[in-house]
Length: 154
Picture 1 (cartoon, rainbow, N blue to C red):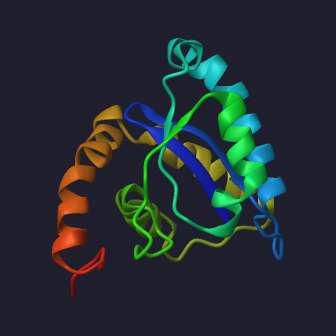
Picture 2: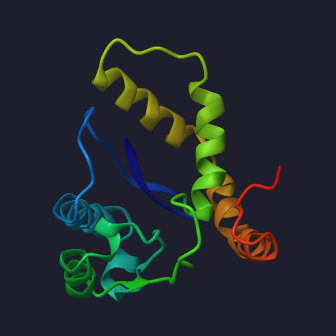
């Protein structure tokens, strides 16, 4: 499983979970702590201003008390996510569709090879790619509402 956090400038942090590893409130809270540490390095102005706005879905690990305490401790703001939305955050559609095309028909010998290729993919995308994904959020939300919660209309 790929866990990823990104903004208008690009990927801030990502982790790959091992096969059969699941996201729990404890795992997610630890990831948020590591994300904060990377934020302090990659986006110090953002981290120092406590202006982090997190968009994630309403899955149990994200809304668990432990996670809420971690977010409060970090002094981050969470954007509301409609309860009828699917697991996929709207911004993920932008990134994951491109990633799916990139990974199509690729095979990896080991976990590290995959991680290196993912990092190369994320770094290959210009900041305009990430900026566009964020800018499309308001349009995507309008479409979600208009289509009764469907992210992708067939």
